[in-house]
Image (cartoon, rainbow, N blue to C red; front, top):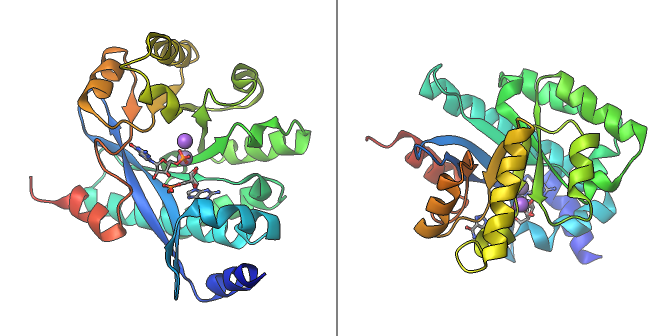
Length: 256
Ligand code: G
Ligand code: G
Ligand code: MN
Ligand code: NA
């Protein structure tokens, strides 16, 4: 209860921050995009990671204003960085969406206004959906995702391979990007079945003309296995952990 009151106050007092983790083109090493990840800077308890407050935020509905802030802030920051980088190779920004946000009829409008306000082109925004969110078969959900796609925004399935029926979602939902769960990448060097499954997912993505992103790359061995398998993109501590806005800016614009 105290935490719930804290969370309400946090929204009013703007206690949330974003971290940005680079998403890298594996063939070239260039940064292709960023994933925005929320943090709560609590006045007494310090930095609280999302796993410690997102579930409560979802239960209480506070995820709606928090998620809206994340979306606006991520679009605003990406638009600024793209302006500074110039017109070639604009960065994409990926934002995680909670199922509770998808229950709201106004979600497509919220996404649309975040784009308009920031000036970020729709093709630069990726919305990440988890498989648990996609077990919802209601037509409204599909229509809402369709309306977001119609803006030109791309959809990604996060943590791909960990849900019950991953392949069915690929038929039902209009996704553009598969994010291969870290658990596959973790075992790629040690467990032959994990390597085969990972390569299989990459080929599935290619066959369906979807982009593939490997998550949780932590070493050069994993990177080379994935790059050899023609996985298009990747993220993980091997490249960079989620960075503060200042640190991300440093990485993007350091003299090279
Ligand atoms: O950032 P971290 O490194 O700790 O993320 C942990 C989990 O929290 C991830 O599963 C991520 O998808 C989720 N998460 C991070 N930021 C957001 C957000 O803005 N909204 C939602 N719904 N989940 C988020
Ligand atoms: O949204 P998603 O569940 O994919 O969130 C990504 C989560 O994975 C975040 O908590 C982020 O901090 C974490 N993460 C990103 N790269 C790595 C990595 O290389 N290793 C580990 N252990 N975690 C990572
Ligand atoms: Mn994610
Ligand atoms: Na993930």
